[in-house]
Amino acid sequence: MDLEKEEIVRVIVLEPQKKSYDTISELLKDWFGDYIELTWRSLFENGAEEIKKVQYDLLITEIQFPEFEVSPEDVLEQIMDLAGPSELPVVVFTKAEGKQLPILAFQLGINEYFSKRRLKKNILEHRFRNLFREIYRKKVVSIQMEDSLKRFQDLYGMNQSEIQDLNTMVKKFKKELEKEYEEKLKLENDKKKMQNVFGMYVDPIIVESLMNNSLSLDQKGKEQEVSVLFSDIRGYTTLSEKMKPEQVISFLNEYFTAMTEVILGYGGMIDKYIGDSIMCLFGAPVFQEDHRQNALDCAVEMIQVFELWQPKWDQIYGFTPQIGIGVASGKAIVGNVGSFQKLSYTAVGDTVNMASRLESMAKPMQVYVSEGLYNHLPEDYAKKYRYEELEPVKIKGKEGLHRILSVKPIS
Image (tube, rainbow, N blue to C red; front, top):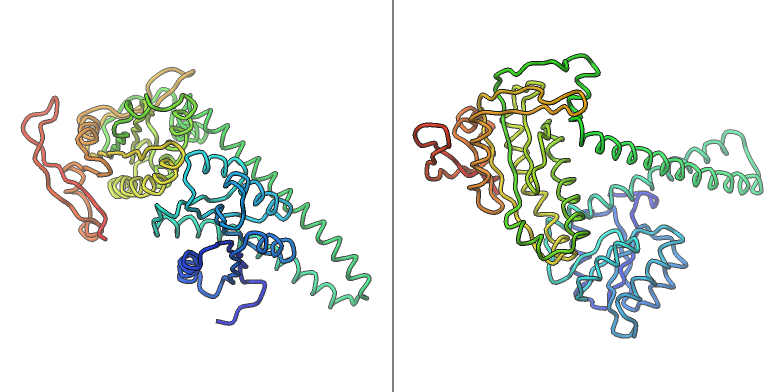
């Protein structure tokens, strides 16, 4: 494939070991092909000089260099001094040990931090694709602006001095545009934070429904087909006792944020956070024909996203948490509970009890579903997953034994 020079992402790799560089190079070429251009420097000082002279789009670096008698912590700071002026994104690949190193790295502004001793290819690919997407977005903006400038020059005709003046003006405008974009992004993030805080008092979906008059404050409870999902961290009490209070809050915020993004992506409504547990509804307050599929897809993706976070949590907090998820479908009584000052939309009934029981039974990193959900899945959709039938269980308040299944994606 013939690509323009501007379309290629230029990557410099500072890595003392040829074998490690070859591993990184092979993975990146496999994922991004001709869209990247790699430069390798085995000596830190040579790499530092290269970065000062050449404009790169990404720096991948080790923080332990045999010839460089500087601690990994000092290397991290020197790397950020190098990258700072040009806002060069930085990814660390290191064999250095120490639980404080990744914390320091993220505090300094390192984009990604990976231990060579615990590499998982699928996690690396996910994180690199996200990073390259942002790098490429900035390159496209730059290319478009330069192309517009060239067409302007061709159209009106300009001498070299005028072109240089215009180039300077455009570069200044580009910086202002990027600053404006960052400010808008910050504004959006602040807006989301405000929505999150407001959501502590009134469910966001309820607020939206009230504003468009599709849901009234005095709505009475009604029986409706829904899917209910419960998730819970295994051994959380023991883990939290070993952590500092600020670490507990930091971990929970990361966990709830990651899981909530998945839930909202499948049209779920967060009913409540209970300690380290999450309860959410699908198919209410706005009914969805495919609420069972949404709930099951959501549960499976929650496990997958949780797995992506596990290495980072292990590096920062020193433990690898696990979750269990239960999902049940059937009739439940749904409606608004509370007062104007504190309104909550919730569901009660056997389906809710079943989902809660399945979550408590689920083994670490597994999804358990009810017979009511499984039996109503469209045949073509059901083929997406593998199902393992488990021992029937007795549910509080219901007679007889109930069939349950474990669900896993087909590899």
